Image (cartoon, rainbow, N blue to C red; front, side):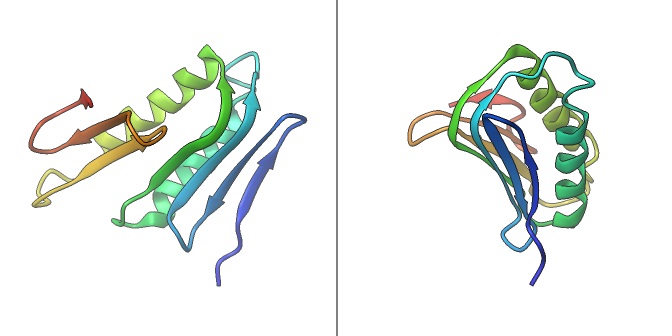
Length: 115
C-alpha cells in the first residue's frame, strides 16, 4: 500500500493518494505568491508522475476557497500535464470536477472545453 502524501496549512489540506490516483483539496487556500504554492506544484507533479499513464483525478469537492494564485497554479499544472501527454495514444483526457454539474475537460478529440 502506497503512503498518502499531504500538505497541510492552517486552513487547508492537499492530499495525494497514489493508490487511487487522486489529489484531494480541502478547506480554504489563500497563499500569497506562486512561490508559496511551490510545495503544491511539486505534489501535483509527483502525482502526475506516479499515475504513470493512468487517470489522475483532482478532487475539489471539499475545497471552500482558492485564490487567484492557487487557480493559476492549478491551471499551469493542467496545461503542463496536457502538453506532456503522448499524442500517439488512442485517447486521453484531463478532467477536473468541482461538483455534480460543472466539469472542465481536455481531451485529444475535442480540445479544451467547459461543460
